[in-house]
Length: 572
View 1: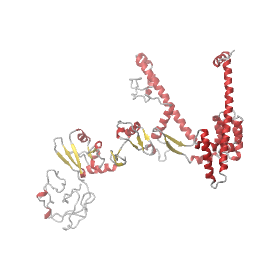
View 2: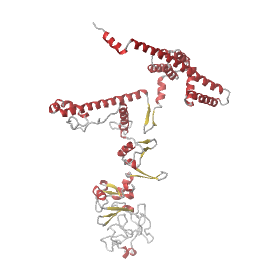
View 3: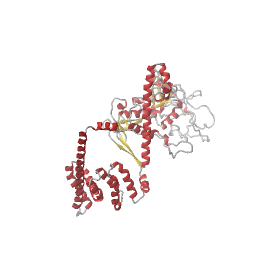
View 4: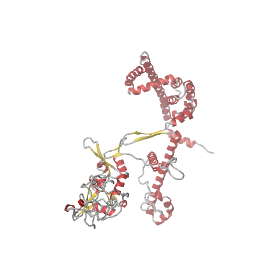
């Protein structure tokens, strides 16, 4: 035979004496009386505000512009009442509209509220949901809603009242949902302190499913964190207990090794798989924070399950798309000299730590040169050359530009002749290909280089010797194969094409006047086989500097043949 006398005795001990029970009953009676007074005051307030709206309507009745006159009258009354309610006139005007709607369109609800059958929370729910019910059916909606609200809290009846209102709507819920789903969207509302609200308007089942999945994933992370903490504590116990204890807990150590803060055996059980340790060290995030982090990670790095760009078994392009943001940050902030905010273009300031993290992952940077007074951007420069620059420089340089090196340009690095950190621009006039070896020589030895127009480099060795490195001429070029008439004396080469070469319809037939004079001898700074500003040489041919001996008409000209050129310093 069982009895609950002991349990009842414990309950009596927890409730205190009979005097305490009587005191509590008195408090309950006072609370009921206070609730009645509050309810009566709230009902009276609603009727006063509704009467204020009727008065504004009456004042504007004879006006020619009735809508504007009513608005002005309502503003004036709201401003007057705002001083009594200690609120803004905008707030009072909104409350006047709500009160008038409640008094005029929900009479049964007002009567039930005055009688104490429902409370202010029930009234708000009925008015909020009943607005979608047609006016001719609203009385029936009120009657059923009041019956369901009696004895229940407002939040518990909200779903039932919403379902009731949907059934009484003249249009089907499916039709209205389709129209509403067509307005689905995502928007960002900028907040304070570098934070923003990302709002997604989605079908309810999708939104609820997203929150459920985020919550379940967050709980898995938190549970794994708890296992990692327990494994770490057990591992430290193993270290202090000797080999016997270690052998007894070896299986447990292997089972949780992937969650240990250090799976190498230094701070936790040894992991036979050689893991790199746990990612839960110092993780004290709440479930809301974990949900937000998982949400961000899925959107920034995840691949959509439905990708219309996918074909067959191949992946689409949506998963490869990465987010892009534009951030302007001070160089001092980037270097950690100050904690000034950075500017997220089109949004709001962001904190310095976030800006530095983005800078660490950025593949390229644009340097902005601004006016010191107005702050206007005067010039934009980037450290990483564009694809067009890379193509042009590979075609121009062809190989490493250090004297004597022939490493192909495709295996070289692009070097800023004047370092970008010293103000050197990322431009073809300040870039040249250097192999890894000679790139290091330039930066870590006393070798110095200066770039002249046309991509010509002047290298200065540690002993002061100067080496001129001209841009190598192309070895493969278009040639003219059609036989041409011997050029006349008026065909002097006086035009260049866009690349600094002779135009294809201009040739120079060498004559006696083309014989080199004393001033045409190549100087010591001219590398053999290259054009100097006013000279050229053809080594190994009689009469250096002129055409080789030949008979008959001159052969077709090609860019690969050496020949006279006008006196100009245009780059070749």
